[in-house]
Amino acid sequence: MTFEQMNQSRMQDYIRVFLKAFGGAPWNEPWTCEQARMRVESFLNTDSAYGLSVEMDGEVAGFILGQFEPYYDGLRFYIQEFCCARAGGGVGTVLLTELERRLKAEGVVRTYLMTIHGDSTEGYYQRRGYITDPDNIWMYKTI
Image (cartoon, rainbow, N blue to C red):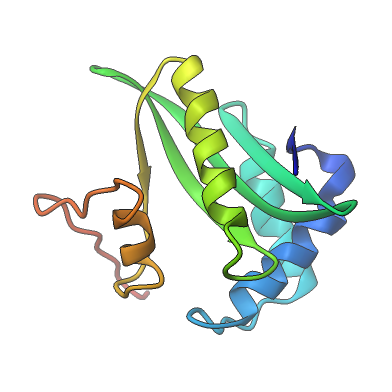
C-alpha cells in the first residue's frame, strides 16, 4: 500500500472509487460520474482541503477527503468523504489510521464526520475510537 495526497490528476480514479463505494450497501445512492466529479472537486478545490488516497496493485483503492478548520481549541478536520473500492479487507482502517497520523503531525486536535446509524457505518467509527456525540444533532430541511 502506498499513500498519496489527493490531486486533480487522479480525478478519474477517485470518481471510480466513489461510485463503487456509494453505489453499494449501505448507501445505495444513484450517483452519476458527473455528480461524483462535481462533489469531489468541490471539496478538493478549496484552500482548506486535504485528501489522502491509498493505492494497491497500481490502482487507487480508497480515499479520505476533508477540510481543516481553525477553532478556539485548535485546528479541527472535517471528513467529508471517505470511501474504498471494496468493503472489508482493512484498507479503510489503514487509510484512516494514516490520515490520523498525518493530521496529528499537522497539529489537528479533533476530527469530525457525519454518517448514518448502523454497525457498518457508525459502528465502524466507534470501533476506531470515534464517539457519537450526545450533545449535538445533525438537522436538515428539504426545500
